[in-house]
Length: 158
Image (cartoon, rainbow, N blue to C red):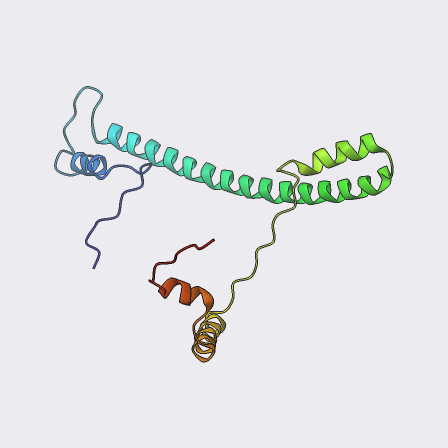
């Protein structure tokens, strides 16, 4: 059971400030000090909330813009790789042009992404492990197993 209280949003209005506003709107509703009363505190609370909302909206826009950039950049890189492939064919025997294209293609941002091998289903891996163990039992110990188990000292005779 998790007894930890969640961390407050750092951009939200701290609870103590909201409580202070509530206190001035309740028990201290009639109290007025130089530049401080329920109305001034309420104004600060509302401005703070608006600024926090504005920041939240800006962060959402930033995330959308980052995603858009990643998508466009990925498309551009794919198009650039295709351009290099075509240009290498076009270059033919032009050694200097081939060298420049090869140098460009070798740069990390233009290298084609590595294809990952799909993970093997767990059941297939377990079956293969069981099958391998069964085969070892039928075949007897391997040369490596015998060498590992051989504790007798060896002498080199020339």
